[in-house]
Image (tube, rainbow, N blue to C red; front, top):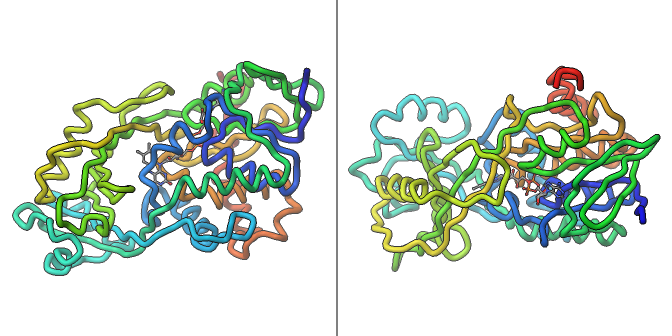
Amino acid sequence: MTIQTDIVIIGAGIAGASAAAALSDYANVIVLEQEAQPGYHSTGRSAATWAPYYGPDVIQQLTALSKPTLTNPPQSLGSSSFTGARGEMMLARKGDEAEIEKHKESGLQPLPIKEALQLVPLLREDTITNILYTDNLLSIDVDALHQAYIKKLKSNGGEIQCDNEVTSLHRNNDSWQVHTSNAIYSAPIVIKAAGAWAGKVGRIAGAIPIEFQPKRRSAALVPYAKNSNMADWPMILGAGETFYCTPFGNGMMISPADETAIEPCDVWPEDLDIATGIDLFQQCIDYDIQSVTHQWAGLRTFATDGKPVVGFDSSINGFFWLAGQGGYGIQTSPAISELCLAIIFPESRDKMHASMSGKTIQSLDESLSPGRFGLSKSSS
Ligand SMILES: Cc1cc2nc3c(=O)[nH]c(=O)nc-3n(C[C@H](O)[C@H](O)[C@H](O)COP(=O)(O)OP(=O)(O)OC[C@H]3O[C@@H](n4cnc5c(N)ncnc54)[C@H](O)[C@@H]3O)c2cc1C
């Protein structure tokens, strides 16, 4: 049996779910997910922050454009803010001067050690030479955001079908035939929101050969130090992104900020990476960690220029790329999903948030379009 719909989205992480929610106001949408539940891969493994000074310029623009939806969501996403106050503190040790100078221009301000100690009393004065700080970094309730997107999709009549791996797809006249382990779906538009599997799904569709590299990033959760105020700490970052830590649920998440190139998979951390993160943390923070509650790793997937790839493929009709969100896919999901909507249904532009002006949409469309790679199928 072939199931007909307007749009099939491959992947039910934050990218697929947010695009599905936006598009479901205008079309029938079915999301296909290979795992038993949505959000199993990168989306369920992030540090859950909105970091406005992080990443390339276009990422910072998308992050800023996403803030209104994250802090003050529309009724269709439940109206309750998905964010909490957090702040960011960058710590420099001897030799980090160049990194500190670079970040002074980016919105973080110098903070005297005495003031920093009031926020983070366990800072090691013997190793830290410089501190920058901003209160302009938020935590995101990723699960609530992801669920809100899914709830909106379902209330508009859309569906997420899990345990449904897309194994092949081809264009037949005016429609895509999408084959999964369970059924065949037919739709004029297919959106590939497959995270680390972006390159693979592009290849099986016969799209232009854009390269993506998944990179492993690891994390450990450790208990808060007894009688400490760690739950209220800002996110702490080693200058040059050598490591970071942030309050996370009922403990402190510590990451060595690793970026190991790896094939798409259900990724696990290496013991050495976890140990490196904890060592770097202890070089800056006076806390002798005795146990790790939990550890995990996730994939951050990048195109070769580090920018997301959003838009229709230039060589085959109706194939839409939504990939390469790197380490920023949660915090940019509101703006990127609106961009998808604006490209696929231009008539939606009149109803968009004022900050998504026609000019902004046009410049984002040009900057993120798959056409920027100038490839054709014959070059594969
Ligand atoms: C440690 C870590 C910290 C991070 N911190 C942050 C942060 O603080 N803020 C931030 O904004 N971002 C952060 N990120 C990045 C963020 O998690 C990702 O950018 C985002 O989750 C990517 O979403 P996605 O939907 O593209 O990918 P995914 O969540 O991986 O979803 C892709 C989905 O596609 C499915 N799929 C793939 N192939 C098929 C197929 N053939 N058929 C059916 N389904 C398929 C997969 O099963 C998967 O569920 C972090 C990432 C990591 C690893």
